[in-house]
Image 1 (cartoon, chains in turn green, blue, purple, orange):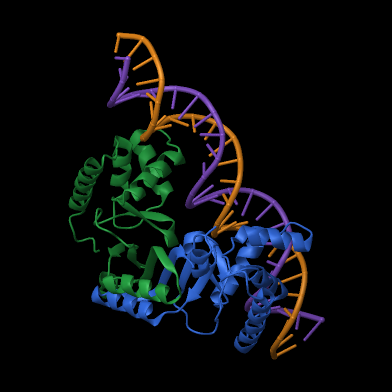
Image 2 (image 1 turned 90 degrees about the horizontal axis):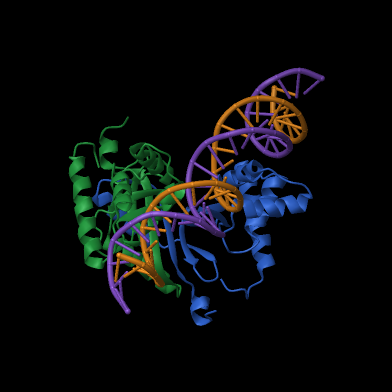
Amino acid sequence: MSALHDHTHCIADALTRADALCAERGARLTALRRRVLELVWSSHRPRGAYAILEDLSQQEGKATAPLTVYRALEFLVEQGLVHRIESLNAYVGCADPGAVHSGQFLVCESCGDAAEIDDPRVGAAIIAAAADRGFRVQRPTVEVRGLCKSCQENPR
Amino acid sequence: MSALHDHTHCIADALTRADALCAERGARLTALRRRVLELVWSSHRPRGAYAILEDLSQQEGKATAPLTVYRALEFLVEQGLVHRIESLNAYVGCADPGAVHSGQFLVCESCGDAAEIDDPRVGAAIIAAAADRGFRVQRPTVEVRGLCKSCQENPR
DNA sequence: GGTCACATGTTATAAAGTAACACCCATGTC
DNA sequence: GACATGGGTGTTACTTTATAACATGTGACC
């Protein structure tokens, strides 16, 4: 994800989709949770809970407790609006909430962007590999480190 | 991995392989590192650094510093003798060090065992999915949560 | 036997995440 | 309107996980 796109649009879209999804589900996207979602979406780079906490504190003009952020993140993850990148202890907005996602990410070592993909071949391969061993898949995690296209083309 | 196997054998094997590999590479598997490797292998469940630290302190009869364990683990991971399970912040012995591993794990939610697999379909699917997006893979991480065969057969 | 590189020890601190409990506030009910 | 109810938020304290900076030991090689 290069810096060449209109990111305010990404944020606005994400919030709109979140509003719609939560309304549809009767889930309460409160002001706080909405603001946290917005902060998660402030880039396509996964952001740590404490980074979000800092932003939030600044917005509020007073210190916020870590739990406040963690609780909001927990809600957002449950609703599928945000994913947690395990290998980074960080959170990133979901580009397609509502759809079933198996959680596959291409994380660029250079720019830090995490692109979410949902490649059926990867999902199928994991299920097949697990099935061969009698393992029942509940939640696959795929986090691939490497170099994204634009960082390969424009090395720093 | 049920409890029905001779685990002392797993440990002994792991240590033997580690000795051989390190000798071959000129890497220094010191007494400390060897002991940490042994503690990682004390089960097939990924273990946290602080759990290992506790065991080590007990063995030594005196408190050991976290860094001691982290440094040993870092060495073991570099040598491919141990893998880190990102989604658990924990470490598990590698069943086949020396071989190229892409790091694929089936982690059972019930018994906690982490079975390492190296399924070519999964590896290939990831590379293909990445290639389609112009992404160059450096280090894939696959950690699948679910239920292992024996826990499906003998639910708790 | 000196020295160089790497391993370990020590102390302190940072970063990430949670527990327990109080309070607020919107909603539905009488 | 008073009241109960339940989810959301605030507050304080704490746990778990990980690292930084610097001193000291040790083994192999010249």
